[in-house]
Amino acid sequence: MDEQFSLRLRLAAPGVWQKELLLVPETDYHGPFQARAQVNFTQVAFGRVTVGAWVAPSFRRKGYSLRSLNAVVDWLRTEKSVFRVDAFVHEANEASYRVLEKAGFEREGVLRNWEVIDGKSRDMLSYAYLIDRS
Image (cartoon, rainbow, N blue to C red):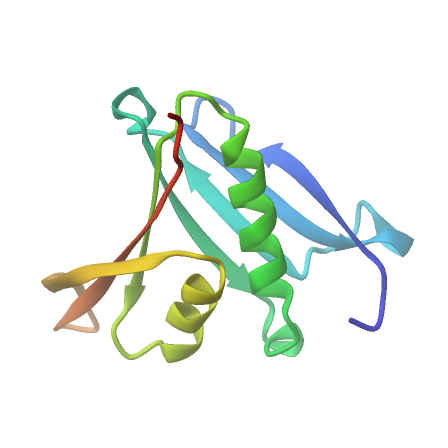
């Protein structure tokens, strides 16, 4: 990575059960972020959360998505109520599911007709990262 970056955690919005981990340039801490990993806590009562990641197009293929995802997983290991981290990715998005696999997520299956995009049903791949609390 060319520039030094910092990770900062913020609530996505007041009252929303979601947090974001942002990868931002150290030279402009309050400026735009280059990568974002979101954590949805709506299922935390059942011991699981869902994560997603996004990287600005000009910063893709530079390791930012993996860095953000690894930071989120490291942070979630400290959350004692979380035993499982879920992630879902479109079947055609090879770059995203390769990042999940590099971060230690395991593919669990295919969710057929999971969502409709542009009038067409799309399959999603289901991934999980299990946190051993024994």
